[in-house]
Length: 246
Image 1 (tube, one colour):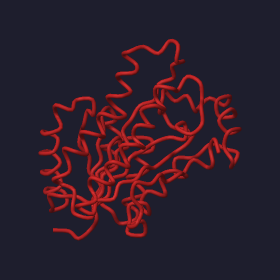
Image 2 (cartoon, rainbow, N blue to C red):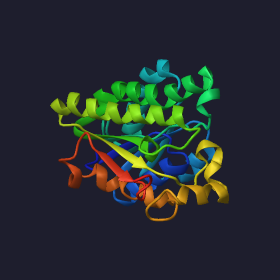
Image 3 (cartoon, rainbow, N blue to C red):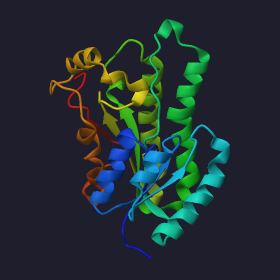
C-alpha cells in the first residue's frame, strides 16, 4: 500500500506526455503511462515510480479491458487499485486546409482528440479517487487562427467545452477538471512540423514571449496544476502558451 499520489497519463511514451510523466515522478507522484507505438521509449523510461501499458485510444470498445489492465498494473506496481489524477494527453494534429479536409481526416481527429478522452474518462471513473483530478489538453489554436488547422482546433475547442461539463457533473465526487492549453512546441507531434526553422519563425511571431516553447515550458506546470495548490480551480483553462495569439 502507498500513500503517494498516482497519475495516469495517456500518450506518455514520448513528447509532452513523457515530459509530464517525468515532472510528475520528480515531484513524488507515481505514474502509469500509456503508449501506442513508442514501446521502446516506454520500456527505457520505466522505473520504480513509472510504469507503462499499451492503449489504442481509437478503440473505445477495448476500454473495459483496459480498465482491468490498469487495475491489475496499479496493484502489482504500486499496491493500490485506484489512482488520483487522469491526464488526457494523447492526441494527434493534422494540417489540412479547410477546403480540402476529408471526412476521414476529420473523423480521425474527432475519434482521437475528443471521443477518446470523453469515453476513457467515463470508463476510468470507478478507479479515480474521490477528490481526484482530470486534466484535459487543448491548444492556443482555439484562440488564434492558423489556416490549415481548422479541424484540429475544432476538436480542441470541444475539449474545452467538455472540461466545463465534466467539472460540473463530477463535482459531486469532488473531482476537479481543468484544461491545459499549450502552444507551439518542438516535438514530433503533427509529423514534427514544428522542427522546421521557417515554421518556428512564423509561430514565434504570434507568441508574446517571442519564441516557441520547450517541452519543459509546458509540462513543468503539470504537478502544480494537479496538486492541492490548485484545489479550488475547476472548469478552468490553464494557459501555458507563452502568450500565443493574445
